Image 1: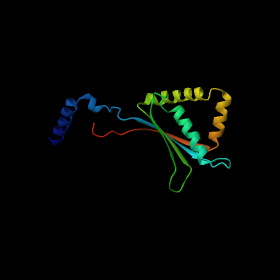
Image 2: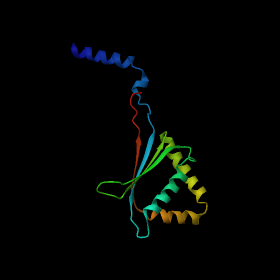
Image 3: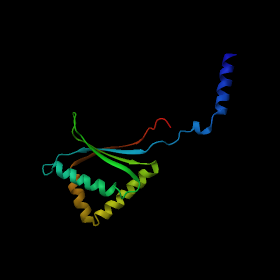
Image 4: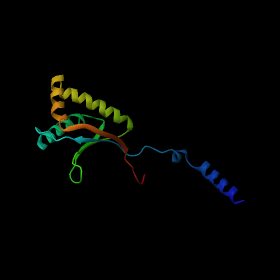
Length: 145
């Protein structure tokens, strides 16, 4: 008789629950995290890397990119591997991941209007990276909603 009571209890609980409590609602913002492996070119400097990074982030994921909530760059500070160079772009939804990247590409082409300007910027900036990277997308966990 006990198993039948338990099944009946679960059935009643299931029926009385609001459907929205069964579905997982989207909560929190989405974070696109790219971890680049740094290179240390002979003709480079931390100052130049910082300058190019600031220019790139401000012009592509900054205020003119309406899909971006925030963008941060993290450079390795302490630990065993100083090659980590991480970019974190925060957007509001999964759809905004695509839109923010498309907008960033448009802003990049607007800022560096000619192919020669884009190539010059890319050559200067890319010398600081090995080409190895990883991409992850996370959703913020919001507690207490």
